[in-house]
Image (cartoon, rainbow, N blue to C red; front, side, top):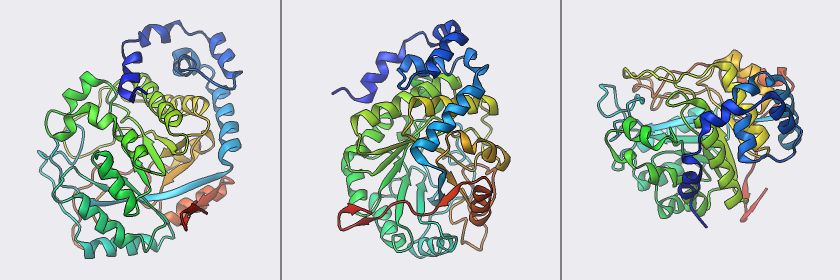
Length: 374
């Protein structure tokens, strides 16, 4: 079977802009009556013509989400282990050329950070690092996981891409989910945005999620960083990527994230900002195309906007977040964060907000007992 890059190439040169201009409202209405959508249908839902039917899309998105996920939202928080990085990504605060305060958690600091986060009641944690394979080695990560597994039932990673063997080592040591954003699916633009460092290898990063699936990850999450390229194109290839993973590994819980560019250390400004309304169009189009996929909306978005889009397809939200290394527990001046947070609500505040909208905040949704899920 072809890998995703080979599948991506079958769509790469498709005249997306021309197709989007050709879509009519009647075509969108016909698509909204269908139970299963093709890639062409999905692309049509991202068209300008579909904007006039956003309410219809939102209603069907809501109905599909309730049918597949109920009125529940899983809560998690990121835990930054290190912000040392060897890449020169022009849009990222961790860029090696940025004069920021760097820090790398010792094992004692990892335990203190885990203890502090655990006080919130959260059971899902996402570990993040910059791409520094010496400070954030696989051995270091495995040791960190062994420390924090006393406090959390689900441990995910959002780190640099690994080989299948590397992912398998982390799975064997207690990691169960992988988040890996392609940043942009535009291969030519990707090279310009990543002028130096190992992240410059587009194909190795693109194949990371499938290597994670092959290594036994329970869940894999993909996405593009909205703002780097035309949002319609990025949303389209994000959806194709998730669909391909679902079809290839039906046993893996495949999810998507919709991160927008946020202020960060450095001078880069996105050329393709996406409005709130267009982000809603992306979310609802993805839900209609991928009814079983989880959709994560992080604290990059403001509290009011997150509350408003809650019924439209969201299944996972971060809460009580800090994007600085040791940001939950270090008393001294913390390291520079990766990007600015918009929704600063604590976990209890986020849980109460969800309840007020008739949703159940979920702190723990699975556990491995004796080799089987419970």
